[in-house]
Length: 628
Image (cartoon, rainbow, N blue to C red; front, side, top):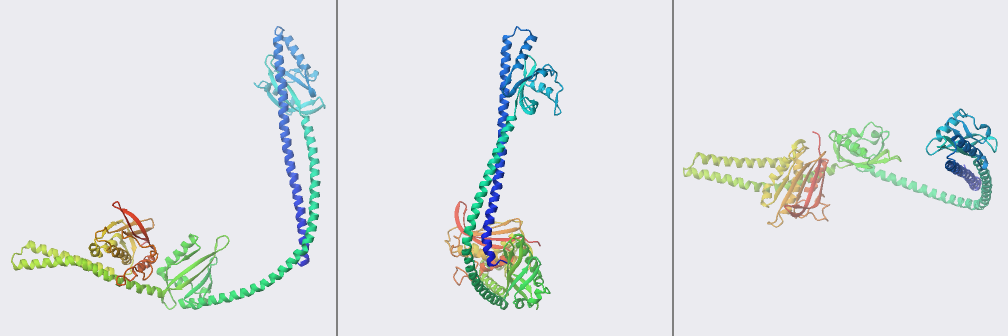
């Protein structure tokens, strides 16, 4: 633990250590950079020196060959042997600065010229240096078209009488079949490098001394400044220490107050029809549940926390798969939270209740789930209320249905009455024939069957059947249109269908009939207020996607005003007169589609039909395909 005196010492010593460390780093960094620069300079110097040496050697040989070629024209009448001796004498007499000379060999390795007279005339074909036949290599490479450069260690440098590095240029003397060459000793390069190295070391020593002097001066200044500041800093620390102590006291008071508020908040959950819970995702254990769980399920919080009762065992078996699927889907999609569709639970007393819950995924810094925190609410009363509203909606629509049936029955009843009257008249006039009798009876039977079918369709519509079955989607929609046929024809509305004939759906066809009936009825109610001579359309299409079916219904009634389009699925919302609607139809349609795990939404749409532009409301229903 640091006390006040230690803090003072560290305030002074830490900057000093920092300055020293920085000085050492700068010195070593400078040495490294200077060393790299030195190596780069040496490499560039070697390249330049080597290039210059090659250029000098090549120029000497090429100039000498030009001289020999000119001599050949001067001595062209001289015998060959005498001419060779003349050229040999010339080559042995040539000297360049720093004891540069010409060496010459014929193609058999005989020495024609050399700085050492004792070697002239000797055969050096087998001369070996560093495992290589040196003269043989000279003869071979010298015959190349543009000559050849060689770099090797010479036998001896005449200036030092020591072996030395040498760069030579060799080339063939065409008219004599000799290989001539000259070399440049590179001991000057070594000397230059040593001079540069000495200069480098001198500069390096000077820079290190200067850097250390600067570091010492900065350190001393830092010590003086830190000593001057340490007392002020210490005073500031003491002042902030008192401030922090005061803030800690306030914070403790706030924590106690917040804890008290939290306890009050949790107590509200304990008394309400809402249950708060926390689940440890990694250990798969419930770590908290409010005592209000007892009001909903009849089991105590201790029973759930001890795992003697598991929440999953309380979920209705018919809803468990859907509950589990929604949970797994939310995790696989990396959602931050999810909301369960309403589902049923069975209480300790075997009562069935409806539950709605909302869960938040709490994640760590690695985006791994650590906890599930959420709440669940008893919505049984709301579901019962929805059921009452559903019945109200259905009863309200029965009046419209009876009106539709009345429209549809007028024509068949009129036909039956006419046929019966005709039979009676024919009988009284004694003009009855078998053909007229059979024709009249067939008409009566055909229209009677139609009336019976209408009654069956009406019965199917109003009965409360919750069974799930497979059915053809277009058949349900066609039954709806048949029930509404009288109202549709009376108001001169054209129904334009585009059905996929192969769509099969597994579910409750009576609920789907209720939904589509409400939407079509709304369109009819608006269209019949339009000018009787204007075009009136309702378009109905069905489509099958990969994992869902889509039903779309649109009209040309002008659309829904933008200020109310977001409210049409709310309960008791209606734009009709009180005598014409309850405002429950679309609300119940929305609830029924949600109970099928589907979606329903509405938009206004501008479109063209027969090259005429129209505006209307487009209702879209999307339902997931389910396995039977």
